[in-house]
Amino acid sequence: MSHEPTEVRFHVEGDALAGWWFQPAMPARTPCPCIVMAHGLGGTRDAGLVPYARTFVEAGFAVLLFDYRHFGASEGEPRQLVSVRGQLADWQGAIDFARQQQGIDPQRIALWGSSFSGGHVLVAAARDGGVAAVSAQGPMMDGLAAVLNVVGYAGIGGILRLSTLALRDQVRALMGSAPLYAPIVGRPGETAAMATGDAYDGYRAIAPPDWRNELAARLALQLPLYRPLRHARRLPCPALIQVCGRDSVAPPEAAEKAASRAGGKAELRRYEDLGHFDIYVGEGFERSCADQVDFFQRHLLS
Image (tube, rainbow, N blue to C red):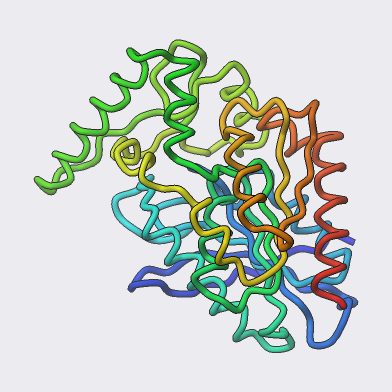
């Protein structure tokens, strides 16, 4: 079955967010559980996430896959702006929208995130208090650790160049000027949010042809202050935390620390041979997605 989605819209703080709504032909239970999904840093709903959504639909779950404001098909100006506060508000808006849909069990809403959104789902679940399950793959659980990771592979010079762009962009924002953009991914030695050996080719492997490889550079000023692992002890539900052993972007140690802080609510899965982008394609996708389906079945259908 193709499991083609329906285009939906919901509003957050005056802007319309674009989503794809996937409805299973044969729900695993009635009313139906729903999995809410969104991408990582600078990603859009059409960048490698539809195979996950269709797999979950085949397992009997409804799925809402959405674009953040300022990205993809969603509204929001300026374009390509990553706001931690704003994206967390988008998650809450998506959760509320899913709960209101006919035939959906509002007590069985799960969140799925990856990379940057792998941290978002932990925070969103802790804040909402009523989410039933969380899945976070290759998650960015500690912005400070991520910045130190950049220093590790790009050196002090690399982080200074990125910080200078961020400061200039922030000044432009205060003056009401258009953003100063930085690449999301680049090759080693280039100035970009991610410039590890596997970042450019790995992201391009899942991105659609019209994907914009840029974001407002001011994010670099927010990132060290964003530490989702601090919310792990407040998780209201079971969480699957999937760690790539060869992750060059999201430090595995931070994800493991988040799982430890969550205690018995967290299930930690390690994929020692996978890098940050390997988990989206091929065997990496098959393994990670199978574990996610098993997790959701155990915690949304019992």
